[in-house]
Length: 265
Image 1 (cartoon, rainbow, N blue to C red):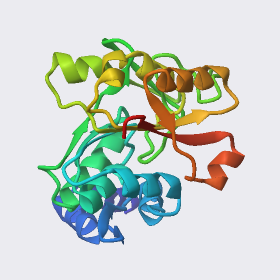
Image 2: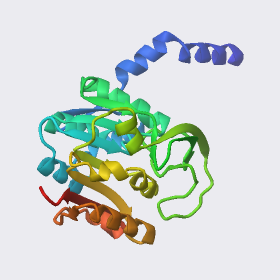
Image 3: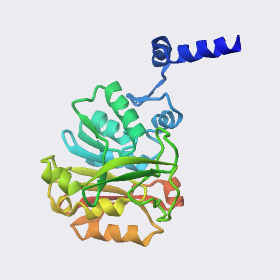
Image 4: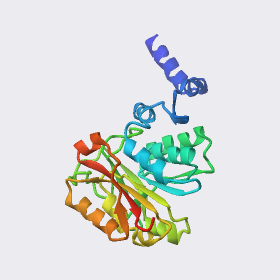
């Protein structure tokens, strides 16, 4: 009898009826009028924390992103800032996320909010060069997770870790994405890739000098000299840091969002 019960349960779980039940029961988090696909724990929490997890980033978007601007979200995860910029500021958003399960949630959020003509998700890693390589995951396929590394398995503290899963990903420099493939240069650039920020900056020398780029928001490890050097590169390209945007929790951990605007603004 147990054998038949197990077979019945297995057949039911793989049936269309089961998936329809799950789909209809899927919780959707609604925060500030923005919908987030909340079937999994971390994406659910990210939706709830839209305004509270990184209030400094939200405030910066509010102050500087304008109607019709081009917003590049590098390290988009499930698209919290992508959704906010598109819905609240009417920006056109290019969202870059290398981890495949995050891209699934990101696309679900785009669909839930009817943003298919305004937010575009790219399952690629923005890099210093164009190459086929691997994304090293710190956890084994967990939607909404972060702290993954493209290329080398080096974390945000610049220490090596043992990947729990390795995913093949195509990497491309921002200069190639914009100028080789004729994509619009961003007006606003958000970078949060948990340790690979130096690769992104090194691969965007032309974008840094493009006058269409007005602001940069980048998360850096203030304990790491390599990250501090990145800030000098940004500042040497006619950008000035804007103070006043605070995130006490992040600052206590040494991971700080730095916000820059081009000097002529």
